[in-house]
Image (cartoon, rainbow, N blue to C red):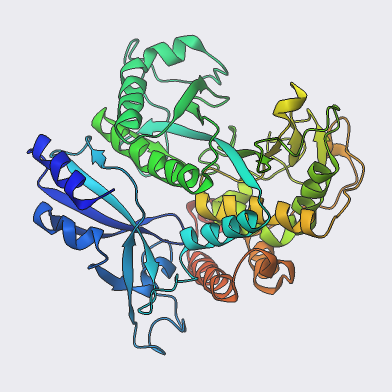
Length: 449
């Protein structure tokens, strides 16, 4: 969007006095600077610089020990380039501001390969070279919780003042009780051009799912998902709640997922997954095979945190094994029913805590690997995937980290730099968690052993 149009928008919104210049790190956390609106031209023209290491810090914002981006290189700056997004008003703060999403480039103008948004952009360039266009949609789940306390607790209903206690799947009453919150979510989505579609009350107490409509611009779809997460947390605070996209905030309730639906269009706009049959085309089968072949090595991008693996358990409404099937929600990869012209793939592994740029890069990059190599998947499963003899996803965070760090097929999707950065980030986080003893451990062992 040209600078003149931004300045025209700002004239119409004199209450906005600052802009947030933001990058998104490997964890999907927004990091950047707050600047006065007079500097907006500087931001739009690439005049803002930040350390390349900004996108590679751990979940606490700390540099990765031994990272080549820090001391070995002098912690060099990169150029923060504007991504082209329309004005993104932030309306839930005490004073409205404007968000400007950016991505990193080297001093010579080449994309910085450690930026997760750049990783998705590179995958999409490979699709463009094959004259194929991915069409994607996402489903994001989250929990509303009490705003205070150090443990999640279901919120009080604004209508009944009673604490939510049951798993009200598809409850219309629960949607009505939180109508004001949901209305503000949809209003903020309209202001930021985020195509929020259906909202449902999900399986857990205080859990909601909001779907995004299909788009042929996966970069925007990933932007929408990451912006949506921040928007939901902000609007929740405005209403006196907190919102969490933790994969499994409650051990005894459903986890929160981030499902990706996608199809592929050729130059004429035809869905190449559709061959008129219920099974789908050979290209669809090769895409499925690519997803399965790379799934173990790429699990870390779908389950990037310690808490993520509490969701990926048998019988938990989340996949735990590598398999696919038709209209089967116990499988990691599902082919939904419906008209043949709308044939698509649903990838069900990622948790809501994952970075949308990495999730989409992994899903689309893996599918392209299968298509390029004309892979053929094993037979689709029928019935309960949890009870079948299938290869399991990595069973722990540590296994997933090492599978990603050493995986030969990871290079089919990601550059070596990002592979090294993400593995190093997660190793550092895991080491820190190992040094902390939980309250439950004290309760179980302190005086018993």
